[in-house]
Image (tube, rainbow, N blue to C red; front, side, top):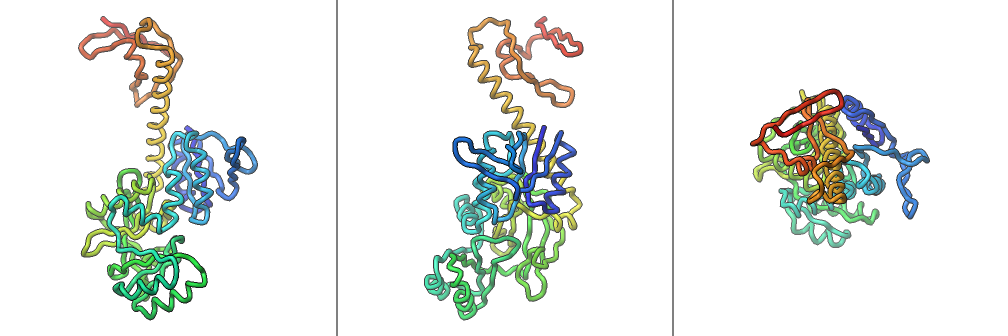
Length: 358
């Protein structure tokens, strides 16, 4: 199986690519900045001016600045690649805090009370009614950038006046007091593979590692783990960092990241996180390829009208191996009509297996 990891070349991306090499036959590391998407009748994806290669698994990573490019690439690959860990929609949804909160709302995932204001005047009316302190965010940004705090109407109003020149909508969110801590849970597939509690530095409210926060390993409650997994699934991501506040109201999701850094988590976790990610990609790709072959075989049987056709049929197809066992395509039993209640004589030699009813 062939795989590719498309990214901006971060340390975390390199770790995952190296881990994938243990499972896939080949893994290409591709620079996102050298990818081009051409639309139109002869459109497609091009890397370094050449047509993009065929792969079974492609993992796309990148910052919010490349959200549209990432979505475009993922959309083109959707029908050509057996497995992608991230859906095309996830790149535009997760890289925008407003769209993320809307997705969480649609899936009834708990989060702090959140407001969107289109302009300064509307925001100032809202600021007279909220409880302080509050959090103010730009819709786009990662690693805690674009997140501000205000402990009074006066400070919030001053921030708004300064931000007004940027002419951007902004998010106002209630502040949940957790003594400057939050939790980063890394979801891979249907489970949380690692988690850490992050503590903000003195006088700093952002607990992000990139903002100077300090991390330590933490055992999540079953409720928090369920919320993290539900968040990743709601956002269409098989790999997702979910940031959670745990207070008197239980776990509340404040942010998600589909290009999570692994350095901080790896320092405090005993789990080989890149290997967990690579192993999951391999298994999902293997399943996807088998399902594709199964569908192809089924379609083939429909074309040659298995039902009612002669019992002696020969079809060129693939078989799947699970350890020392052979898994035959579904149509084989439709023709042979095997039964668990009967006995069979099995003859085998290199390259050939014959099964005959006794």
